[in-house]
Image 1 (cartoon, rainbow, N blue to C red):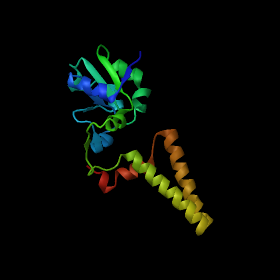
Image 2 (cartoon, rainbow, N blue to C red):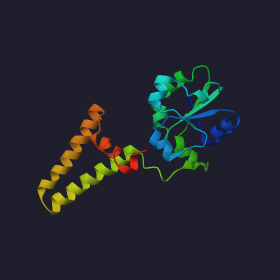
Image 3 (cartoon, rainbow, N blue to C red):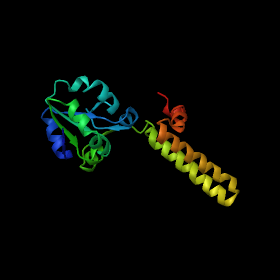
Image 4 (cartoon, rainbow, N blue to C red):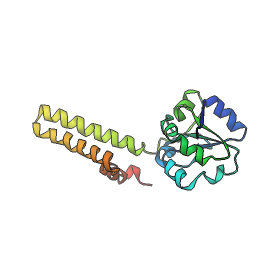
Length: 174
């Protein structure tokens, strides 16, 4: 089962004709920036619960993520969820929507997406460990090893201790 991709301009046209846009990203990403009137149904929920209530009666649904990668990777699942409906994937996701000049709802008061925070924190710690190891003491290279071990553990198990810690930070509390 396959699902076709369409451009942002074609998506805009479909939306004006009654299609429903479904954002499959996480809630933190959606809260920071989303396309107006897009329904949030993160991919794991979509797989478990199917289409959101607001899309049940639509004859056409269009799925999107940030860059299009998640939607392309989940194309078969999305096609199954949209069974019996005309369904598309927004080519290159939210990025192409913005590149085409279409507006988004952006809320700068919302924190960066959690995975971006993890990337920033891990990169900063690894860089600090490298610089301090070179300038101060080789013992600081252990910081790089610690970060690497944490990332490896996260990749292998799906548990990210750094993400759990960052979720406790005041800016991530809701």
